[in-house]
Image (cartoon, rainbow, N blue to C red; front, side, top):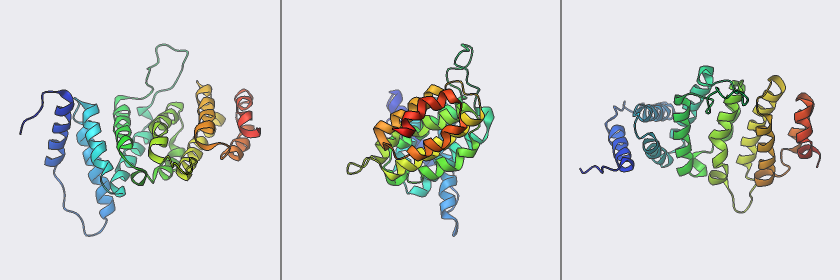
Length: 241
């Protein structure tokens, strides 16, 4: 076989070879769904271990997973959950401190983010149908501002791509996903001094006009009393107009 010297082609070829030569255990008679999750985690680890050409390796894996049954993509969410469970993967955010890292999480978390973005870029809604359940399941893990920002960055850029419905733009999956994300944001605002609250305020305004209109208005109104007054004042328009 001829392998292109161009890095992009090389990365894709290398990934294909690595994945094809990866030792695969026999499929169990029971627990096939869990087997598929474990197989996906093994593929993710192969890509993360590749070091070089990560974007190309991630793109290949994302394309492969987008063609497999939904139970395979569950492995992606299992991997992200393991990243979020370890708070050492995330740094404290301080926008006034120039010595703080520009990306408030470590390389491992960033590389997993790259793989997930690749998967979402390739997949259709039926391959990411458990996204609301995933976000809801990790809300309790999000105790740092950087963790919340990580999850927002993980899913938000692809809500329109994955779930846009031309006949009804307020797709129920978008509403369910954003509801869980908003819960994480309000938990953070109520319990922690947030370095960049305007990020979350702007995020909610963006979603109102692009995705959900007033669908989450009651939720926002309910939480205003529990967050700092200066932040609540900026969100009043979302709750009362």
